[in-house]
Image (cartoon, rainbow, N blue to C red; front, side):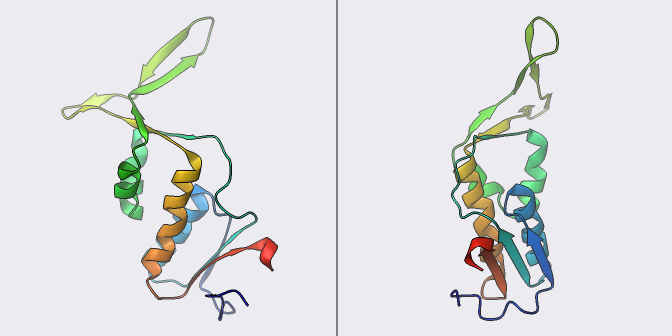
Length: 137
């Protein structure tokens, strides 16, 4: 049996998929004290392209307890995106307020995954939380 998988027979929640959305679900469940199993089909890190994250994700990252590690990771911050709806490309800024321009993140996916994939384990802090890969079963 895998270390840490001594009792996976009675979880409160099973989350299938360890990408950003699955990890967010596992983090929230762990924050509410639920016993969580996070099942992923492939081990991390995986080679995926980067994630472009809109600045509107910052409140969610803060709620999940990962904003500080994301900021500390040194991801490129940008003020908007280049889009092409017709013949010409144009830059579309995210917006701004009294504190300045809103900045998105250009996050290297392996680094971003490492942050969000380990957070539920840290939240559990000795409480039941399991991160398992299907290919181990």
